Image (tube, rainbow, N blue to C red; front, side):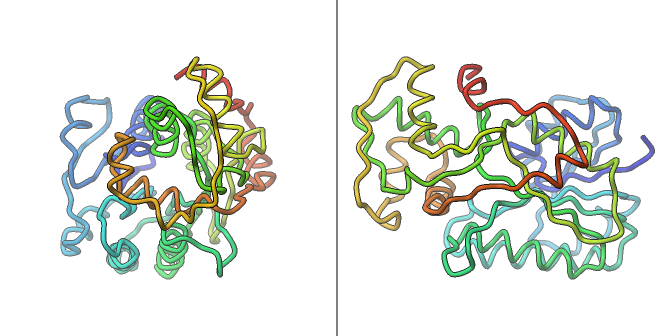
Length: 294
């Protein structure tokens, strides 16, 4: 339990849950984000909160001082505009600071990847970020996940809001794309347990739930447990036509985040989690149980 942990992006959905999980396990945690007030009010044992603007790189060396493991949960989808440039800039600042630090391990939560020629901006930004962090010379463990099933996750909330707010679901044809949704609880176990399995080399793991499901099947399951039955009619609508205005009307998720996520759903994103499960065995939760819990 002597490891000192920094969580960058601690105010986000995964960040807040991860900080709670690390605190419950007794790890000393430095939780950093631009807006940290909500987490600070929880007064979690062993957790120190610090406000940081990653666009101000001069603050990073002090932030990394005495840190053994860095969790990198930062993304720029909520920034709007050219968030690829934003993610590249921030990752470059962190890379440069890591080169001058004593950090021994970086754990980067990323996304499953589509073929290079078919990547959305969101997936491309995740790839660029991982490549830059690896240039730091600090061993990076990249954990790639697809849809995260849990109340509050952006993808889950978009699905829920569409079911609750639309009388008829007419999603683009990407609704037939398949993925391996992973329960939030399972993902948190993976993230925390990676602390106990450091490596002196870069690694990439993929996290998956126990099922391969299309987004259409996930909609149907959510409707079954929510009692909100809606006709579901996929139409040949390009994802680029889904406007920020439309998303702002139907979902509580920030529209720039929702649009970035939706544009990344048009391909099959199926994880191969055999290497991760060999390292960190656990019982995987079917998504239907998480839908029911919601």
